[in-house]
Amino acid sequence: MMNQNDTTSPTSRVAARVRQNTVSAGIAAALLLYFSYGGGRFNVPDGDDAVAIGGAILIHTLKLGGFAMLAAAIWSASGSRHALIFDGLCSMIVGVLFIVSGAMMMIGGGGGVLYIIFGVMFIVAGKRNASEWAALAPAQPTPDRAPPTKSSESSNDTGYGK
Image 1: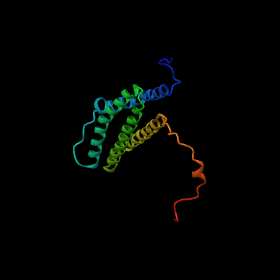
Image 2: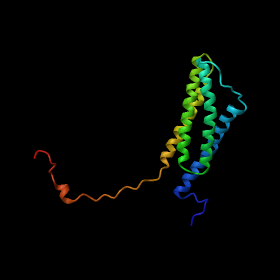
Image 3: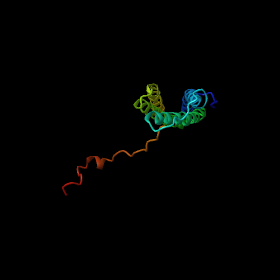
Image 4: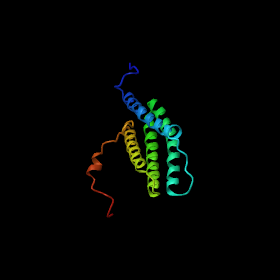
């Protein structure tokens, strides 16, 4: 009989690994939401220049990405393997949008290097979680195949040239 703390079963090992993701997703969510609603006091810039567009992309990424990472943290706490792919996809999207916003700001003459660095970090973390999701997939049973018969091994007839 297995108890809940038994880590020898494959299901328990997967759940334990997924739960480890809760802290990192929670930290990402807290920081994104803090800088979008709390301490950052960012306002969506007016204008249609590259800095304003990059700033608007950044602010919306902070808000939406913060809630997505919060959902990933809560889902990871449940131990579901699929939380890793959700976290991975959300992290990669946030990373790409950080890079786009940083590049737009740099094109417009503003600062954006730090956002590009954060974007790369989110993409790397997202790729790691997506690959771990694939690695933690349950083993697929292989169908039993009948061994070849003597007649099919000795037959030289390929069906060509008749």
